[in-house]
Length: 327
Length: 258
Ligand SMILES: Nc1ncnc2c1ncn2[C@@H]1O[C@H](COP(=O)(O)OP(=O)(O)OP(=O)(O)O)[C@@H](O)[C@H]1O
Ligand SMILES: [Mg+2]
Image (cartoon, rainbow over all chains, first blue to last red; front, side):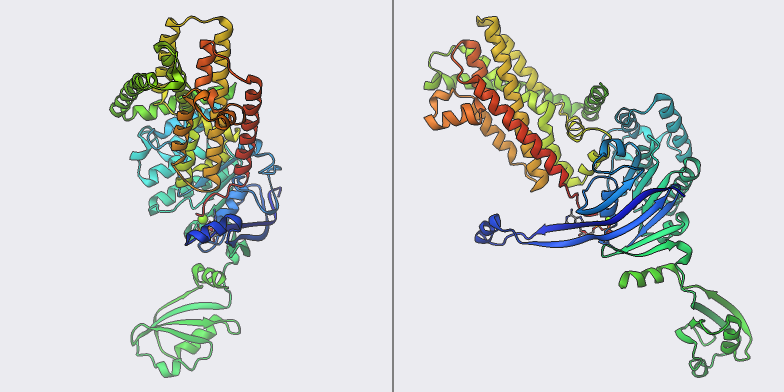
Protein backbone atom coordinates (compact mmCIF):
# COMPACT_ATOMS: atom_id res chain seq x y z
CA UNK A 1 0.00 0.00 0.00
CA UNK A 2 1.00 3.55 -0.70
CA UNK A 3 2.49 5.24 2.38
CA UNK A 4 0.92 8.62 2.89
CA UNK A 5 2.20 9.46 6.35
CA UNK A 6 5.87 9.07 7.06
CA UNK A 7 7.30 10.10 10.42
CA UNK A 8 11.00 9.81 11.04
CA UNK A 9 12.84 10.28 14.34
CA UNK A 10 10.49 12.96 15.54
CA UNK A 11 11.44 14.81 18.72
CA UNK A 12 9.87 17.58 20.72
CA UNK A 13 10.91 19.02 24.05
CA UNK A 14 9.05 21.58 26.10
CA UNK A 15 10.76 23.96 28.44
CA UNK A 16 8.65 24.97 31.35
CA UNK A 17 10.00 27.94 33.22
CA UNK A 18 9.96 27.93 36.97
CA UNK A 19 8.18 30.88 38.48
CA UNK A 20 10.36 32.99 40.71
CA UNK A 21 9.43 33.16 44.36
CA UNK A 22 11.16 36.35 45.38
CA UNK A 23 11.95 39.65 43.77
CA UNK A 24 15.68 38.92 43.72
CA UNK A 25 15.05 35.61 42.00
CA UNK A 26 12.82 37.35 39.51
CA UNK A 27 15.66 39.73 38.67
CA UNK A 28 18.10 36.87 38.32
CA UNK A 29 15.67 35.05 36.09
CA UNK A 30 15.81 37.93 33.63
CA UNK A 31 19.38 36.93 32.91
CA UNK A 32 19.18 33.21 33.37
CA UNK A 33 15.85 31.50 33.58
CA UNK A 34 15.51 28.20 35.40
CA UNK A 35 13.59 25.69 33.45
CA UNK A 36 12.61 22.07 33.36
CA UNK A 37 12.72 20.08 30.15
CA UNK A 38 9.95 17.64 29.28
CA UNK A 39 10.64 15.21 26.47
CA UNK A 40 7.10 15.15 25.14
CA UNK A 41 7.96 13.20 22.00
CA UNK A 42 11.22 11.32 22.10
CA UNK A 43 12.41 9.95 18.79
CA UNK A 44 9.42 8.28 17.23
CA UNK A 45 9.12 6.87 13.73
CA UNK A 46 6.23 5.23 11.95
CA UNK A 47 4.44 5.23 8.64
CA UNK A 48 0.81 4.87 7.68
CA UNK A 49 -0.78 3.72 4.44
CA UNK A 50 -3.69 5.20 2.60
CA UNK A 51 -7.05 4.13 4.02
CA UNK A 52 -5.78 2.96 7.39
CA UNK A 53 -7.47 3.83 10.67
CA UNK A 54 -4.71 3.87 13.24
CA UNK A 55 -5.29 4.12 16.95
CA UNK A 56 -2.97 6.16 19.12
CA UNK A 57 -2.90 4.97 22.70
CA UNK A 58 -0.94 6.00 25.73
CA UNK A 59 -1.37 7.21 29.29
CA UNK A 60 -1.89 10.87 30.18
CA UNK A 61 1.10 12.96 29.17
CA UNK A 62 2.50 10.28 26.84
CA UNK A 63 2.86 12.70 23.95
CA UNK A 64 -0.15 11.82 21.80
CA UNK A 65 -1.54 15.33 21.42
CA UNK A 66 1.92 16.75 20.82
CA UNK A 67 2.42 14.27 17.99
CA UNK A 68 -0.96 15.17 16.49
CA UNK A 69 -0.09 18.87 16.70
CA UNK A 70 3.19 18.31 14.89
CA UNK A 71 1.50 16.18 12.24
CA UNK A 72 -1.04 18.91 11.62
CA UNK A 73 1.51 21.71 11.37
CA UNK A 74 0.55 23.55 14.56
CA UNK A 75 3.72 22.89 16.48
CA UNK A 76 7.22 22.68 14.99
CA UNK A 77 9.33 19.65 15.78
CA UNK A 78 12.77 20.09 17.35
CA UNK A 79 14.17 17.50 15.01
CA UNK A 80 13.07 14.69 12.77
CA UNK A 81 10.90 14.68 9.74
CA UNK A 82 7.23 14.47 8.81
CA UNK A 83 5.82 13.93 5.38
CA UNK A 84 2.07 13.70 4.91
CA UNK A 85 0.59 13.37 1.41
CA UNK A 86 3.98 14.42 0.13
CA UNK A 87 3.93 17.68 2.08
CA UNK A 88 6.14 18.95 4.84
CA UNK A 89 3.57 20.35 7.30
CA UNK A 90 5.69 23.35 8.28
CA UNK A 91 7.31 24.33 5.02
CA UNK A 92 4.15 24.00 2.94
CA UNK A 93 1.52 24.62 5.60
CA UNK A 94 -1.03 26.50 3.50
CA UNK A 95 -1.09 23.93 0.69
CA UNK A 96 -0.93 21.10 3.19
CA UNK A 97 -3.74 21.94 5.61
CA UNK A 98 -6.29 22.14 2.81
CA UNK A 99 -5.91 18.37 2.58
CA UNK A 100 -6.29 17.45 6.23
CA UNK A 101 -8.93 17.68 8.91
CA UNK A 102 -8.25 17.94 12.64
CA UNK A 103 -10.49 17.61 15.67
CA UNK A 104 -9.54 18.24 19.27
CA UNK A 105 -12.25 16.72 21.42
CA UNK A 106 -11.76 19.33 24.11
CA UNK A 107 -11.85 22.42 21.92
CA UNK A 108 -14.37 23.80 19.49
CA UNK A 109 -13.86 25.21 16.02
CA UNK A 110 -17.43 26.45 15.84
CA UNK A 111 -18.60 29.95 16.76
CA UNK A 112 -20.06 29.82 20.22
CA UNK A 113 -22.85 32.32 19.58
CA UNK A 114 -23.76 31.33 16.03
CA UNK A 115 -25.40 28.20 14.64
CA UNK A 116 -22.96 25.62 13.24
CA UNK A 117 -24.35 26.16 9.75
CA UNK A 118 -22.78 29.66 9.73
CA UNK A 119 -19.43 28.18 10.60
CA UNK A 120 -19.85 25.61 7.83
CA UNK A 121 -20.41 28.39 5.29
CA UNK A 122 -17.38 30.20 6.64
CA UNK A 123 -15.27 27.15 5.93
CA UNK A 124 -16.67 27.03 2.43
CA UNK A 125 -15.02 30.42 1.82
CA UNK A 126 -11.83 29.70 3.70
CA UNK A 127 -11.23 26.41 1.92
CA UNK A 128 -12.58 27.68 -1.41
CA UNK A 129 -14.94 24.74 -1.64
CA UNK A 130 -16.85 24.47 -4.89
CA UNK A 131 -20.55 25.18 -4.36
CA UNK A 132 -21.80 21.93 -5.81
CA UNK A 133 -19.34 19.83 -3.81
CA UNK A 134 -20.12 21.80 -0.67
CA UNK A 135 -23.89 21.33 -1.04
CA UNK A 136 -23.57 17.63 -1.77
CA UNK A 137 -21.19 16.99 1.08
CA UNK A 138 -23.23 18.97 3.55
CA UNK A 139 -26.42 17.22 2.55
CA UNK A 140 -24.76 13.86 2.90
CA UNK A 141 -23.42 14.69 6.37
CA UNK A 142 -26.71 16.16 7.51
CA UNK A 143 -28.52 12.97 6.59
CA UNK A 144 -25.89 10.70 8.04
CA UNK A 145 -25.69 12.52 11.36
CA UNK A 146 -29.27 13.72 11.54
CA UNK A 147 -28.28 17.37 11.83
CA UNK A 148 -31.06 19.17 10.03
CA UNK A 149 -32.49 20.88 13.11
CA UNK A 150 -29.35 20.85 15.21
CA UNK A 151 -27.15 22.84 12.87
CA UNK A 152 -29.52 25.79 12.97
CA UNK A 153 -29.43 26.23 16.73
CA UNK A 154 -26.78 28.47 18.27
CA UNK A 155 -23.77 26.35 19.17
CA UNK A 156 -23.94 27.29 22.83
CA UNK A 157 -27.33 25.58 23.07
CA UNK A 158 -26.11 22.23 21.75
CA UNK A 159 -25.38 19.19 23.86
CA UNK A 160 -21.84 17.85 23.80
CA UNK A 161 -22.82 15.00 21.50
CA UNK A 162 -24.66 17.29 19.08
CA UNK A 163 -21.76 19.70 19.05
CA UNK A 164 -19.25 16.94 18.41
CA UNK A 165 -21.19 15.81 15.34
CA UNK A 166 -20.98 19.37 14.05
CA UNK A 167 -17.25 19.50 14.78
CA UNK A 168 -16.88 16.48 12.51
CA UNK A 169 -18.78 18.18 9.72
CA UNK A 170 -16.73 21.34 10.23
CA UNK A 171 -13.45 19.55 9.81
CA UNK A 172 -14.54 17.30 6.96
CA UNK A 173 -16.54 19.54 4.61
CA UNK A 174 -13.50 20.08 2.44
CA UNK A 175 -13.14 16.31 2.12
CA UNK A 176 -9.71 15.90 3.65
CA UNK A 177 -7.69 12.87 2.68
CA UNK A 178 -6.17 12.54 6.13
CA UNK A 179 -7.91 13.26 9.42
CA UNK A 180 -6.39 13.54 12.88
CA UNK A 181 -8.74 13.02 15.79
CA UNK A 182 -7.56 13.81 19.30
CA UNK A 183 -9.99 12.24 21.76
CA UNK A 184 -13.05 12.64 19.55
CA UNK A 185 -15.33 10.69 21.88
CA UNK A 186 -14.35 12.27 25.17
CA UNK A 187 -17.35 12.82 27.40
CA UNK A 188 -19.86 11.26 25.00
CA UNK A 189 -22.50 8.68 25.95
CA UNK A 190 -22.59 5.22 24.36
CA UNK A 191 -25.03 6.24 21.64
CA UNK A 192 -23.10 9.30 20.59
CA UNK A 193 -19.90 7.26 20.62
CA UNK A 194 -21.52 4.72 18.28
CA UNK A 195 -22.67 7.44 15.91
CA UNK A 196 -19.21 8.93 15.78
CA UNK A 197 -17.55 5.57 15.24
CA UNK A 198 -19.98 4.71 12.48
CA UNK A 199 -19.32 8.07 10.84
CA UNK A 200 -15.57 7.50 10.89
CA UNK A 201 -15.97 4.05 9.37
CA UNK A 202 -18.31 5.37 6.68
CA UNK A 203 -15.88 8.09 5.69
CA UNK A 204 -13.09 5.57 5.60
CA UNK A 205 -15.05 3.20 3.35
CA UNK A 206 -16.70 5.73 1.11
CA UNK A 207 -13.84 8.18 0.55
CA UNK A 208 -10.85 6.11 1.60
CA UNK A 209 -10.06 8.71 4.25
CA UNK A 210 -7.08 7.88 6.45
CA UNK A 211 -7.56 8.44 10.18
CA UNK A 212 -5.33 8.71 13.21
CA UNK A 213 -7.40 8.52 16.37
CA UNK A 214 -6.27 9.04 19.94
CA UNK A 215 -8.52 7.87 22.70
CA UNK A 216 -8.54 6.59 26.22
CA UNK A 217 -11.56 4.50 25.37
CA UNK A 218 -10.33 1.08 24.31
CA UNK A 219 -13.67 0.31 22.75
CA UNK A 220 -12.99 3.09 20.27
CA UNK A 221 -9.74 1.44 19.34
CA UNK A 222 -11.12 -2.09 19.19
CA UNK A 223 -14.10 -0.95 17.15
CA UNK A 224 -12.34 1.33 14.72
CA UNK A 225 -8.75 0.42 14.27
CA UNK A 226 -6.90 -2.42 12.68
CA UNK A 227 -3.64 -1.10 13.87
CA UNK A 228 -2.61 0.55 17.08
CA UNK A 229 0.44 2.55 18.08
CA UNK A 230 1.06 2.80 21.79
CA UNK A 231 3.32 5.48 23.12
CA UNK A 232 4.60 6.00 26.61
CA UNK A 233 6.94 8.73 27.83
CA UNK A 234 7.23 9.95 24.27
CA UNK A 235 8.42 6.63 22.88
CA UNK A 236 6.64 4.00 20.80
CA UNK A 237 6.26 0.82 22.83
CA UNK A 238 3.93 -1.07 20.49
CA UNK A 239 3.04 -0.73 16.82
CA UNK A 240 1.08 -3.59 15.33
CA UNK A 241 -2.35 -5.07 14.64
CA UNK A 242 -4.89 -4.78 17.41
CA UNK A 243 -5.26 -8.56 17.25
CA UNK A 244 -1.64 -8.88 18.36
CA UNK A 245 -2.56 -7.19 21.60
CA UNK A 246 -3.30 -10.51 23.24
CA UNK A 247 -1.26 -12.60 25.57
CA UNK A 248 -1.45 -16.07 24.12
CA UNK A 249 -0.18 -17.93 27.16
CA UNK A 250 -2.69 -16.61 29.62
CA UNK A 251 -6.38 -17.40 30.16
CA UNK A 252 -8.93 -16.39 32.70
CA UNK A 253 -11.18 -19.20 33.85
CA UNK A 254 -14.32 -18.96 35.90
CA UNK A 255 -15.74 -22.28 36.90
CA UNK A 256 -18.75 -23.36 38.96
CA UNK A 257 -19.16 -26.90 40.34
CA UNK A 258 -22.20 -28.73 41.66
CA UNK A 259 -20.15 -29.80 44.63
CA UNK A 260 -18.01 -27.86 47.08
CA UNK A 261 -14.49 -27.06 45.91
CA UNK A 262 -11.45 -28.45 47.69
CA UNK A 263 -9.36 -25.31 47.61
CA UNK A 264 -6.32 -26.97 49.17
CA UNK A 265 -6.09 -29.47 46.38
CA UNK A 266 -6.87 -26.84 43.75
CA UNK A 267 -4.08 -24.56 44.90
CA UNK A 268 -1.59 -27.34 44.22
CA UNK A 269 -2.28 -27.30 40.47
CA UNK A 270 0.87 -25.60 39.28
CA UNK A 271 -0.47 -23.96 36.09
CA UNK A 272 -3.04 -21.87 37.90
CA UNK A 273 -3.36 -19.01 40.34
CA UNK A 274 -6.54 -18.53 42.33
CA UNK A 275 -7.76 -14.99 41.81
CA UNK A 276 -11.07 -15.04 43.60
CA UNK A 277 -13.01 -17.53 45.73
CA UNK A 278 -16.41 -16.46 44.53
CA UNK A 279 -18.27 -19.00 46.69
CA UNK A 280 -17.82 -22.52 47.99
CA UNK A 281 -18.85 -23.73 44.55
CA UNK A 282 -17.20 -21.32 42.22
CA UNK A 283 -13.79 -19.80 41.65
CA UNK A 284 -11.98 -17.46 39.31
CA UNK A 285 -8.53 -18.50 38.11
CA UNK A 286 -5.65 -17.21 36.08
CA UNK A 287 -4.00 -19.97 34.10
CA UNK A 288 -0.71 -20.30 32.31
CA UNK A 289 -1.39 -22.36 29.20
CA UNK A 290 2.02 -22.22 27.69
CA UNK A 291 2.79 -25.89 28.24
CA UNK A 292 -0.63 -27.48 28.52
CA UNK A 293 -3.69 -27.84 26.35
CA UNK A 294 -6.77 -26.14 27.68
CA UNK A 295 -8.82 -29.33 27.82
CA UNK A 296 -6.11 -31.05 29.83
CA UNK A 297 -5.97 -28.13 32.19
CA UNK A 298 -9.72 -28.25 32.72
CA UNK A 299 -9.44 -31.94 33.49
CA UNK A 300 -6.84 -31.12 36.16
CA UNK A 301 -9.00 -28.44 37.69
CA UNK A 302 -12.15 -30.54 37.52
CA UNK A 303 -10.72 -33.44 39.52
CA UNK A 304 -13.57 -35.68 38.48
CA UNK A 305 -16.29 -33.31 39.64
CA UNK A 306 -19.29 -32.18 37.56
CA UNK A 307 -19.17 -28.64 36.16
CA UNK A 308 -22.29 -26.49 36.22
CA UNK A 309 -20.82 -23.51 34.37
CA UNK A 310 -17.51 -22.64 32.72
CA UNK A 311 -16.12 -19.51 31.18
CA UNK A 312 -12.71 -19.16 29.57
CA UNK A 313 -11.51 -15.79 28.36
CA UNK A 314 -8.42 -14.02 27.12
CA UNK A 315 -6.95 -11.34 29.33
CA UNK A 316 -8.78 -8.11 28.52
CA UNK A 317 -6.96 -5.64 26.35
CA UNK A 318 -6.83 -3.18 29.23
CA UNK A 319 -4.59 -5.47 31.13
CA UNK A 320 -2.05 -5.74 28.36
CA UNK A 321 -2.12 -2.06 27.89
CA UNK A 322 -1.68 -1.37 31.56
CA UNK A 323 1.39 -3.54 31.43
CA UNK A 324 2.76 -1.63 28.45
CA UNK A 325 2.05 1.67 30.18
CA UNK A 326 3.90 0.61 33.31
CA UNK A 327 7.20 -0.29 31.69
CA UNK B 1 -9.58 38.31 -4.00
CA UNK B 2 -10.77 35.25 -2.17
CA UNK B 3 -9.14 36.74 0.94
CA UNK B 4 -11.47 39.69 0.51
CA UNK B 5 -14.55 37.47 0.38
CA UNK B 6 -13.34 35.64 3.47
CA UNK B 7 -12.80 38.95 5.21
CA UNK B 8 -16.37 40.03 4.43
CA UNK B 9 -17.65 36.70 5.74
CA UNK B 10 -15.80 37.26 8.98
CA UNK B 11 -17.18 40.79 9.29
CA UNK B 12 -20.65 39.44 8.62
CA UNK B 13 -20.31 36.78 11.28
CA UNK B 14 -18.93 39.29 13.78
CA UNK B 15 -22.05 41.34 13.20
CA UNK B 16 -24.24 38.27 13.52
CA UNK B 17 -22.53 37.27 16.74
CA UNK B 18 -23.17 40.68 18.23
CA UNK B 19 -26.73 40.64 16.95
CA UNK B 20 -27.30 37.45 18.90
CA UNK B 21 -27.45 39.80 21.86
CA UNK B 22 -29.19 42.58 19.98
CA UNK B 23 -30.26 44.75 22.92
CA UNK B 24 -26.89 44.82 24.56
CA UNK B 25 -25.19 45.50 21.25
CA UNK B 26 -27.34 48.53 20.43
CA UNK B 27 -26.97 49.99 23.87
CA UNK B 28 -23.23 49.60 23.80
CA UNK B 29 -22.99 51.10 20.30
CA UNK B 30 -25.05 54.13 21.21
CA UNK B 31 -23.37 54.71 24.53
CA UNK B 32 -19.93 54.36 23.04
CA UNK B 33 -20.78 56.84 20.33
CA UNK B 34 -22.16 59.31 22.88
CA UNK B 35 -19.18 58.89 25.17
CA UNK B 36 -16.68 59.40 22.38
CA UNK B 37 -18.42 62.61 21.30
CA UNK B 38 -18.42 64.09 24.78
CA UNK B 39 -14.68 63.48 25.16
CA UNK B 40 -13.58 66.11 22.64
CA UNK B 41 -15.70 68.79 24.31
CA UNK B 42 -14.00 68.16 27.62
CA UNK B 43 -10.68 68.07 25.87
CA UNK B 44 -11.42 71.50 24.41
CA UNK B 45 -11.84 73.13 27.82
CA UNK B 46 -8.63 71.51 29.01
CA UNK B 47 -6.77 72.52 25.88
CA UNK B 48 -7.82 76.15 26.27
CA UNK B 49 -5.65 76.33 29.36
CA UNK B 50 -2.74 74.37 27.93
CA UNK B 51 0.21 76.42 26.69
CA UNK B 52 0.85 73.85 23.94
CA UNK B 53 -2.35 74.82 22.22
CA UNK B 54 -1.87 78.57 22.24
CA UNK B 55 -3.36 79.88 19.03
CA UNK B 56 -5.43 76.77 18.26
CA UNK B 57 -9.04 77.43 17.38
CA UNK B 58 -12.02 75.38 18.53
CA UNK B 59 -12.35 73.68 15.12
CA UNK B 60 -8.69 72.82 14.96
CA UNK B 61 -8.93 71.12 18.31
CA UNK B 62 -12.01 69.23 17.17
CA UNK B 63 -10.02 68.14 14.11
CA UNK B 64 -7.23 66.82 16.32
CA UNK B 65 -9.74 64.97 18.47
CA UNK B 66 -11.39 63.54 15.38
CA UNK B 67 -8.08 62.25 14.06
CA UNK B 68 -7.20 60.64 17.39
CA UNK B 69 -10.58 59.00 17.56
CA UNK B 70 -10.48 57.84 13.97
CA UNK B 71 -7.04 56.26 14.25
CA UNK B 72 -8.01 54.56 17.47
CA UNK B 73 -11.38 53.43 16.12
CA UNK B 74 -9.98 52.20 12.82
CA UNK B 75 -7.25 50.27 14.61
CA UNK B 76 -9.62 48.72 17.12
CA UNK B 77 -12.08 47.67 14.45
CA UNK B 78 -9.66 46.22 11.95
CA UNK B 79 -6.67 44.84 13.74
CA UNK B 80 -6.27 45.70 17.39
CA UNK B 81 -8.63 42.82 18.12
CA UNK B 82 -5.65 40.51 17.65
CA UNK B 83 -4.33 41.66 21.02
CA UNK B 84 -7.58 40.78 22.70
CA UNK B 85 -7.85 37.60 20.65
CA UNK B 86 -4.33 36.54 21.61
CA UNK B 87 -5.30 36.59 25.26
CA UNK B 88 -8.59 34.80 24.71
CA UNK B 89 -7.34 32.13 22.38
CA UNK B 90 -4.25 31.34 24.44
CA UNK B 91 -6.56 31.01 27.40
CA UNK B 92 -9.03 28.76 25.57
CA UNK B 93 -6.34 26.95 23.63
CA UNK B 94 -8.01 27.81 20.33
CA UNK B 95 -5.04 29.56 18.75
CA UNK B 96 -4.20 26.12 17.34
CA UNK B 97 -7.02 26.47 14.85
CA UNK B 98 -5.57 29.37 12.87
CA UNK B 99 -2.78 27.02 11.80
CA UNK B 100 -5.34 24.66 10.31
CA UNK B 101 -6.80 27.13 7.82
CA UNK B 102 -5.27 27.11 4.34
CA UNK B 103 -4.64 30.84 4.57
CA UNK B 104 -1.99 33.26 5.68
CA UNK B 105 -1.68 33.00 9.47
CA UNK B 106 -1.78 36.71 10.15
CA UNK B 107 -4.71 37.39 7.83
CA UNK B 108 -6.71 34.55 9.38
CA UNK B 109 -5.98 35.89 12.82
CA UNK B 110 -6.82 39.47 11.90
CA UNK B 111 -10.03 38.52 10.12
CA UNK B 112 -11.23 36.44 13.03
CA UNK B 113 -10.48 39.31 15.40
CA UNK B 114 -12.70 41.86 13.66
CA UNK B 115 -14.33 44.12 16.23
CA UNK B 116 -17.74 45.41 15.24
CA UNK B 117 -18.44 47.58 18.22
CA UNK B 118 -15.62 50.06 17.80
CA UNK B 119 -17.09 51.11 14.47
CA UNK B 120 -18.84 53.65 16.72
CA UNK B 121 -15.44 55.19 17.51
CA UNK B 122 -14.38 55.19 13.90
CA UNK B 123 -17.60 56.82 12.74
CA UNK B 124 -17.36 59.32 15.59
CA UNK B 125 -13.88 60.21 14.39
CA UNK B 126 -15.03 60.65 10.81
CA UNK B 127 -17.93 62.82 11.98
CA UNK B 128 -15.63 65.07 14.01
CA UNK B 129 -13.09 65.37 11.19
CA UNK B 130 -15.86 66.19 8.73
CA UNK B 131 -17.35 68.78 11.04
CA UNK B 132 -13.98 70.43 11.60
CA UNK B 133 -12.99 70.43 7.93
CA UNK B 134 -16.24 72.19 7.10
CA UNK B 135 -15.04 75.12 9.18
CA UNK B 136 -11.32 75.12 8.39
CA UNK B 137 -9.76 76.32 5.18
CA UNK B 138 -7.23 73.98 3.63
CA UNK B 139 -5.45 73.20 0.40
CA UNK B 140 -5.33 69.97 -1.52
CA UNK B 141 -1.68 69.28 -0.67
CA UNK B 142 -2.35 69.89 3.01
CA UNK B 143 -5.16 67.37 3.16
CA UNK B 144 -3.06 64.90 1.20
CA UNK B 145 -0.29 65.24 3.75
CA UNK B 146 -2.83 64.82 6.56
CA UNK B 147 -4.17 61.61 5.06
CA UNK B 148 -0.65 60.33 4.50
CA UNK B 149 0.27 60.97 8.13
CA UNK B 150 -2.94 59.33 9.36
CA UNK B 151 -2.04 56.24 7.34
CA UNK B 152 1.43 56.27 8.87
CA UNK B 153 -0.18 56.52 12.30
CA UNK B 154 -2.38 53.52 11.56
CA UNK B 155 0.59 51.49 10.32
CA UNK B 156 2.43 52.37 13.52
CA UNK B 157 -0.53 51.16 15.55
CA UNK B 158 -0.61 48.01 13.50
CA UNK B 159 3.01 47.45 14.43
CA UNK B 160 2.15 47.91 18.11
CA UNK B 161 -0.72 45.45 17.80
CA UNK B 162 1.62 42.88 16.30
CA UNK B 163 4.22 43.38 19.01
CA UNK B 164 1.64 43.16 21.79
CA UNK B 165 0.10 40.05 20.27
CA UNK B 166 3.52 38.44 19.87
CA UNK B 167 4.39 39.29 23.46
CA UNK B 168 1.19 37.72 24.77
CA UNK B 169 1.56 34.56 22.71
CA UNK B 170 5.22 34.12 23.58
CA UNK B 171 5.32 35.10 27.21
CA UNK B 172 2.25 35.75 29.21
CA UNK B 173 -1.41 36.60 29.05
CA UNK B 174 -2.03 40.18 30.03
CA UNK B 175 -4.69 42.78 29.52
CA UNK B 176 -2.36 45.54 30.67
CA UNK B 177 -1.14 46.33 27.19
CA UNK B 178 -4.36 48.21 26.50
CA UNK B 179 -3.42 50.72 29.16
CA UNK B 180 -0.11 51.07 27.41
CA UNK B 181 -1.97 51.95 24.25
CA UNK B 182 -3.98 54.61 26.06
CA UNK B 183 -0.74 56.15 27.26
CA UNK B 184 0.56 56.24 23.70
CA UNK B 185 -2.61 57.99 22.59
CA UNK B 186 -2.30 60.43 25.45
CA UNK B 187 1.26 61.34 24.50
CA UNK B 188 0.27 61.67 20.85
CA UNK B 189 -2.46 64.19 21.47
CA UNK B 190 -0.28 67.09 22.62
CA UNK B 191 1.96 69.12 20.36
CA UNK B 192 5.53 67.92 20.53
CA UNK B 193 6.64 71.43 21.53
CA UNK B 194 5.35 70.99 25.08
CA UNK B 195 7.65 68.02 25.76
CA UNK B 196 11.29 68.21 26.83
CA UNK B 197 13.65 68.26 23.88
CA UNK B 198 14.79 64.60 24.07
CA UNK B 199 11.24 63.26 24.47
CA UNK B 200 10.18 65.27 21.51
CA UNK B 201 13.03 63.92 19.39
CA UNK B 202 12.32 60.33 20.35
CA UNK B 203 8.62 60.58 19.60
CA UNK B 204 8.99 62.51 16.39
CA UNK B 205 11.71 60.51 14.69
CA UNK B 206 12.63 57.28 16.44
CA UNK B 207 9.23 56.06 17.59
CA UNK B 208 7.10 58.69 15.88
CA UNK B 209 4.06 58.51 18.13
CA UNK B 210 2.94 61.97 17.07
CA UNK B 211 1.87 60.72 13.64
CA UNK B 212 -0.97 59.02 15.43
CA UNK B 213 -2.44 62.31 16.59
CA UNK B 214 -1.09 65.77 16.52
CA UNK B 215 0.99 65.70 13.32
CA UNK B 216 -1.83 65.01 10.86
CA UNK B 217 -3.82 67.85 12.44
CA UNK B 218 -0.86 70.21 12.26
CA UNK B 219 -0.28 69.23 8.66
CA UNK B 220 -3.76 70.37 7.77
CA UNK B 221 -3.60 73.51 9.81
CA UNK B 222 -0.38 74.46 8.11
CA UNK B 223 2.21 74.16 10.87
CA UNK B 224 5.46 72.63 9.80
CA UNK B 225 5.61 68.89 10.37
CA UNK B 226 9.24 67.94 10.87
CA UNK B 227 11.08 65.11 9.19
CA UNK B 228 8.27 63.38 7.32
CA UNK B 229 10.80 61.28 5.46
CA UNK B 230 12.57 60.14 8.60
CA UNK B 231 9.23 59.37 10.23
CA UNK B 232 8.18 57.28 7.25
CA UNK B 233 11.43 55.39 7.46
CA UNK B 234 11.00 54.76 11.20
CA UNK B 235 7.42 53.57 10.82
CA UNK B 236 8.31 51.20 8.01
CA UNK B 237 11.25 49.94 10.02
CA UNK B 238 9.21 49.35 13.19
CA UNK B 239 6.50 47.70 11.14
CA UNK B 240 8.92 45.31 9.46
CA UNK B 241 10.41 44.31 12.78
CA UNK B 242 6.97 43.71 14.26
CA UNK B 243 5.90 41.60 11.34
CA UNK B 244 9.05 39.52 11.56
CA UNK B 245 8.66 39.16 15.34
CA UNK B 246 5.06 38.05 15.06
CA UNK B 247 5.71 35.32 12.52
CA UNK B 248 8.77 34.22 14.42
CA UNK B 249 6.81 33.89 17.64
CA UNK B 250 4.18 31.81 15.86
CA UNK B 251 6.88 29.58 14.53
CA UNK B 252 7.86 28.82 18.11
CA UNK B 253 4.29 28.45 19.27
CA UNK B 254 4.10 25.49 21.61
CA UNK B 255 0.33 25.29 22.04
CA UNK B 256 -0.81 23.98 25.41
CA UNK B 257 -0.94 20.52 26.91
CA UNK B 258 -4.06 18.46 26.30
N1 LIG C 1 2.73 23.66 25.66
C1 LIG C 1 3.37 22.88 26.53
N2 LIG C 1 4.29 23.40 27.38
C2 LIG C 1 4.94 22.61 28.24
N3 LIG C 1 4.76 21.30 28.35
C3 LIG C 1 3.85 20.71 27.54
C4 LIG C 1 3.12 21.47 26.60
N4 LIG C 1 2.29 20.64 25.93
C5 LIG C 1 2.51 19.41 26.43
N5 LIG C 1 3.45 19.44 27.41
C6 LIG C 1 3.97 18.28 28.16
O1 LIG C 1 4.36 17.30 27.23
C7 LIG C 1 3.95 16.00 27.63
C8 LIG C 1 3.07 15.36 26.58
O2 LIG C 1 1.83 16.05 26.52
P1 LIG C 1 0.65 15.64 25.54
O3 LIG C 1 -0.38 16.67 25.65
O4 LIG C 1 1.22 15.37 24.19
O5 LIG C 1 0.16 14.27 26.19
P2 LIG C 1 -1.06 13.33 25.77
O6 LIG C 1 -0.48 12.02 25.40
O7 LIG C 1 -1.91 14.00 24.77
O8 LIG C 1 -1.81 13.19 27.15
P3 LIG C 1 -3.39 13.14 27.49
O9 LIG C 1 -3.81 11.74 27.31
O10 LIG C 1 -3.41 13.52 28.93
O11 LIG C 1 -4.08 14.12 26.61
C9 LIG C 1 3.29 16.19 28.98
O12 LIG C 1 4.23 15.90 29.98
C10 LIG C 1 2.91 17.64 29.02
O13 LIG C 1 2.96 18.14 30.33
MG1 LIG D 1 -3.84 14.69 24.72
